[in-house]
Figure 1 (cartoon, rainbow, N blue to C red):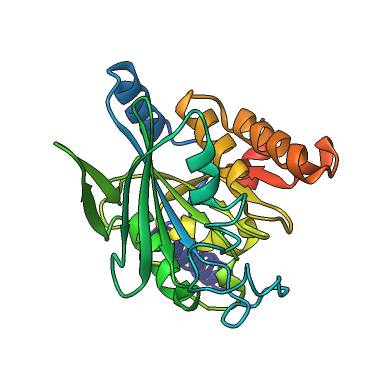
Figure 2 (tube, rainbow, N blue to C red):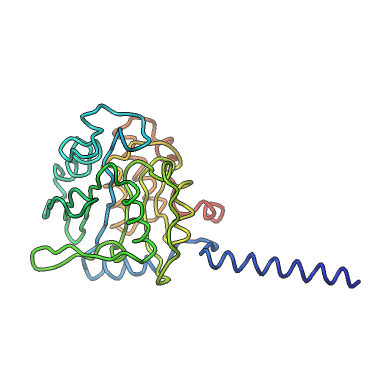
Length: 285
């Protein structure tokens, strides 16, 4: 009888230790974060500025573990021709050619890591994109996760007003090669208990990003389940759907439709390429 009691005590202690471990590492039953959505609804109802901050390491044949692209597009220091920035479907070129978006700010050499920062505007929606040097993948990921966990702050000054960036942006987006395939980076635990909405447009980003996003208490609106071209039309589709306060399911569909439009890979497959929210939620839908 005593041995059974001892066994039960040991089991209870083990369960308690495990629950404490989960709490410390911010691993919880994950559901859609109502608080972040309510913040967005409140701002949109007042037509306040909504800020999307994009972290984009330039495509780099030499410094990233990617399938090499033509050298013209794979130079991680060439803003003009880079596949993810200056090429036809690169973020800067694509949004600059759009009839819906207006380029209102562009500045080079923001830091030792960021070669250029641009700001595009559509009504009360602002998209701030930072082009990191191709060999600064690690730093781009650190900045991204330091934003989702509430550590990194900053702003960009425009004519007569400033836009909050990093942890204070309304949406943070990583867009490019999945650098977590190359680097082992562990995000910091959430600093302020604020849940932030986030997107990761990179190959197999759900499986690679989920642990760090969970630790930082970020909610992954859209990630990916497979390999893809992280081009600007996907980013635009997600941001437009998000700004219209659509569900994560609709964001996923919008991303898939945009991807199929340009890649011609089949609509069903394109939609399934993207993951909305946590996979644990799928069982509840």
